[in-house]
Image (tube, rainbow, N blue to C red):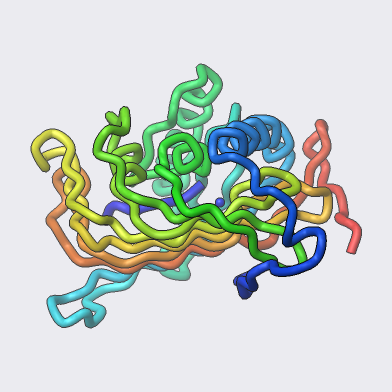
Length: 272
């Protein structure tokens, strides 16, 4: 089964009203987008100091939305030149056998090789990055709210038929409708909550076909040293990637146990 992955603590949103902060002028869309992209690029090197555990559950659904089959994976993820590298640790609760480990290690080697050449690694599914969302999402209706005590800029996301999108990931972002939240102080993407407003097809639907209504939710939060990492990604809908049979699916992806390493790959205990 092909996977849909995201490389971005639910907090209540409360409008920021009254007072000096509430009267402060909102940043322009172009200004905030540029600052957010700059923050994303600057944080790429810092993210490469982390290795995290990723827990993924993918459910295949029948026509009534009931689970037909579930896949449980545990992976370790790290970054090279801003690209996420994923390394499988277990499948459905069991450790990999020797043959699977050899295949895994070869796949990781190829991912690192591609990332070292500043090319997006080939994966088993779609990988939507925060950079894709920041570059391509069409933003409207800007407002300021408070999230966990931090001023946050929220935008409505509207589909953009004129977006310069060529990959499946880019086309998915251009077809989004929903909301995007950006931390005002740092410019980091914090929350994405969207639904596909139309079908997305690549290669006439032969390469990929993601149906209208595909919903996704991404949460990103800062580590104690200020580096923002993906914490949660989840979604549901109907999609087909490559030659995999079209199916309804639901996924839930959590990132936890992130470890900070120094240049000698020695774990550094984070301050509590």
